Length: 49
Image (cartoon, rainbow, N blue to C red; front, side, top):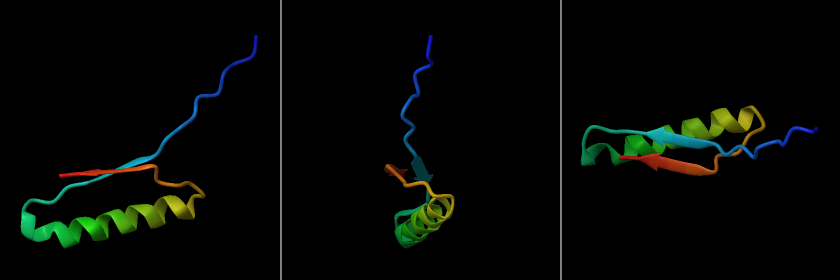
């Protein structure tokens, strides 16, 4: 019997302490996207609070 390959999705999570740091959260997401892109992967979902 053959094994099924599951599709993988990549999610990133960035958290900041206050609303005044939302710019920092965007910078975190950009850094995570560059990291995954360097590995040949794409980010399917961005999460944060």
